[in-house]
Image (cartoon, rainbow, N blue to C red; front, side, top):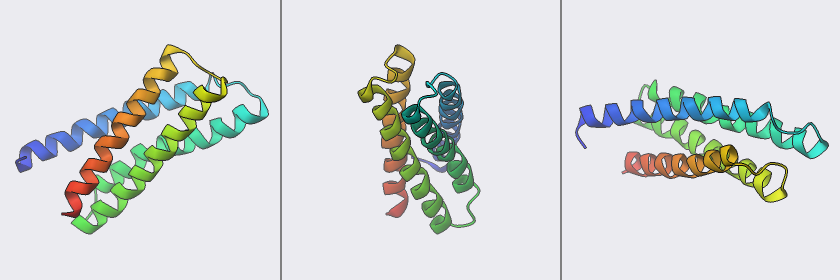
Length: 122
């Protein structure tokens, strides 16, 4: 991938992560306020928005090493967000088309970010 293509790709991913974070915030409004719902809501909201925040920080990295480091945090947060969404579905707390689509997107973003990290480390 050429530099211009790589830059455009990184920008496209940034926009997808922004939409993902906004969808996580929308989801947080419909999670039931039970004890378990509150725990998952808090953790998911933190990790789901942190993926985007750390990715933006990675894009502003001053070096390849700094980009890699922040991207690694973004990968970890994406993995955690996917896990919380999976728990919402598996526990039966929520299981509708919106959350299933969000889960699918979280897995896809996790794969993309992991692949980007792997590409950056070589």
